[in-house]
Amino acid sequence: MKSFGDFLFISTLSGVYTLQGEANEAINISGNLPSPAGVVRIDVNDNYIIIGLFDYNFVKNEIWIRPTSDITSTKETVSLIPKNIKLGQNYPNPFNPSTKISWQSPIGSHQTLKVYDVLGNEVATLVDEYKTAGSYEVDFDAAGLTSGVYFYRLQSGSFVESSKMILLK
Figure 1: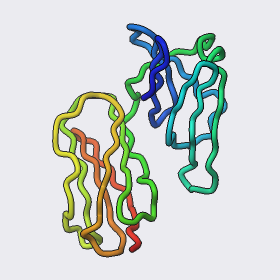
Figure 2: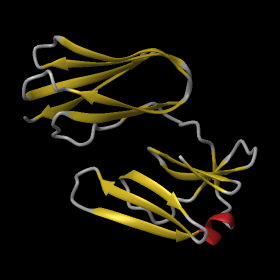
Figure 3: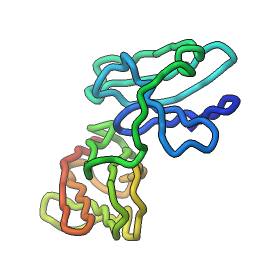
Figure 4: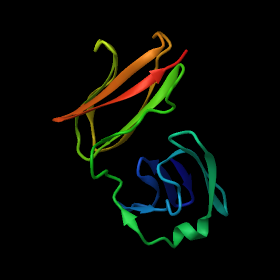
């Protein structure tokens, strides 16, 4: 998140948004952002919003610059509450020694995010608590683990999804 005047800029799994004043709706300013892209950093000055980006395959990194005057005239609005539950791919992947895991949930529920080795042994519990609707990201530090394939598993209510990640030391 980054603020500028009466605006708050927010990056999520589904894009970059601005929230003005006490509004309950966010304005999508993603425009021509590449998809899928991860937002590394948002900076704002008097004339421009500058967003550092990477694609999830790490093939390219980009800087996206847009005049702040364009942002104030944007009309499209969307809710910041995600429509679907989604477990994102960790990044970087492969990683050493840490990686980020993101997910989003349209409803509040008790959520668990756990990491398992290839034999199915639990090696870490990253989240085990009630979370409100929204987008989340956690850091996983695997400094104490050996190189190999690991799986992370998100459970939220009846929803369960797993994804693979690779630790290279």
